[in-house]
Figure (cartoon, rainbow, N blue to C red):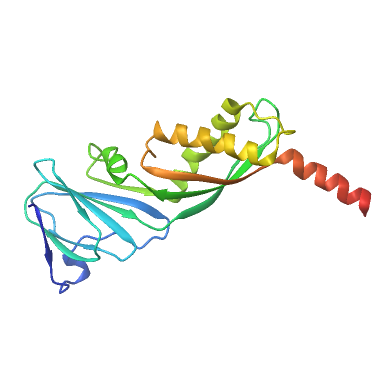
Length: 201
């Protein structure tokens, strides 16, 4: 085994940990011969250690751990659900209208997620904004691929976009996240609402 639990007796410069930034969702670091070998896993994180022989050790209990053999890559993943609103502005889609969706992401298949990181550089950070950027691109493609008609029932529209987003995520570096499209709105609806507001006012 390339890691061992250890006691919490270290100063901050004596162990590796995720930088204090609420925007960070995934952080990874490859421990080499000259690096500090102790690391911390917080209550809201899962960690995965890729040992020199390729074996992956999963850590779901908060605490301090020691890397016993190097090089070993540590990947920390935030376990909390991510809820965000993603928007595609007007003028990008062929129909001319903009679209926004409320999306919830949770980690489903951590092995798939870390598979995209194993061959990456020594150290890296994936922030919420990186994920939003990728989801924005997918939402645009999902609306294009789903042939949405605004006269459709809203539940049907949400289901169609949800299915397409799930399919697109499986083929992207976000594979491993479970995506739940909770609601969808269009810019055209805002314009209609404004007109109705003026008429009724």
